Image (cartoon, rainbow over the protein chains, first blue to last red):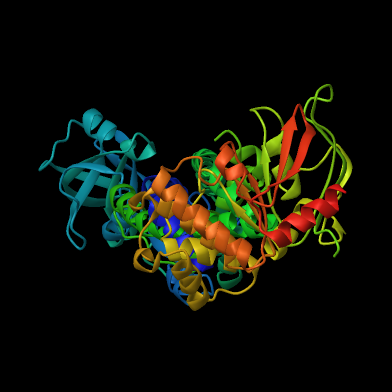
Length: 379
Length: 237
């Protein structure tokens, strides 16, 4: 009989129940969407942030310069050591660099040897006019400012010299980054090593830029692991980016929590308003039930169960909507799908139930406080 | 025989200054049909509410079946009502979203366990076997009042308290409802009925007339059945 009364009561007030369910669903959708996004955020937003450059750099330690006191450098064995280090699973991209100051005509210019494919991966913001240089050829990419000073254009040929070594190059593309790259010339690493005379067993690299995934493991721990594997380099964490990543993830999480709290508050107000109206509408019913023998607890049980039914229905509907919203945000903001995390569903239902029951407290109290003689009077 | 309802020095005031009931004393014997009459504001419904435990007296006491319910808590009163009393209202007060059968079963639900067959039987007793699945909105006033009576009877209370049960009914339906009350009286139920209609007032064993919260007349009906008339005489000396 209890279930029949509950069902008929809900059925009889479809409109109000629908409003309450939608209010709860709105809150549950936010909890589910933001919960899913939050759990995926370390991976997805972390990746976005890593797109703004390397967060770890390998440089020669102070005083370690092999036989090249003027241009500190280290062996390219470091790259293999990186692959074998315990930090390898967290490394998502590396770009080796060898720097030297060469001359084009009478103009001194920084020549940077690198691996173009790897640079493209960890520095996707580089704007290259023309083409990226092809590895293994004499193509180069020249910084925008350097190109202007040297009067070079895409397709131009020029000769660069370093201590008597000459290398003729062509301009495949002109790069603009807004940083020091705008003043540099980029060539394939073997060409730079040959030009700068660094083909021996040591001194082939000046720097290795590393993009590491810091979500699951602190960046400092990853850096320590690398330093342990490659003792002849100094590992520097680029703090600005690491801190920015951590701070931004933290701020976004807080923003999400705040938005969720505000929406849950709005849901609670909507539920409370709907439940209050329902109780007011049903005052005579409640009075009658008490008159025929219902105790306060029986009235409370009926209304609490109604509230819980609304919470669970709203929670389920909201979770479905929330998952769809998460996908929409994932696709439009991170260009990726958001994983279904089964753990979020019970959390969403639990939060819906808690908010609904909390919002129903005052209306249910009002329902249980109905005085039958007062409500049945005035006929 | 012990009185089933005893009101002693009953006072009720809502605002603390004016007494709606002003020191009422009366006693009702088991099986007696007592009608309460009086002009509007004389305290009839207030008295019935206090007897039914829907309201509490400001002073004095009300004993039902030997139990003083004056100081009962709300839940104690609810338990007492469902065990001992059947309430019939002028406005029927049926739950609009439930069928006639379900409205009767609700009273069983709050009492103890639901017995659908028992609910069907009591509805048959008031002549509504053919309206079991109808909702109040699809029934006439007379039918709704009979559902209300069936709901009052389903838990087999000894006492039926009725507040103008025919107040909203036409003559034909009033007769049907009053016939049911006659049967209940004949079955031994104690009936306390508030009414405005003089012809109904004469119908029971006894008539209490109220004015300004006081009993101004307590008369035994001459046409009452001999047994009940004796009770009346005994009470009034």
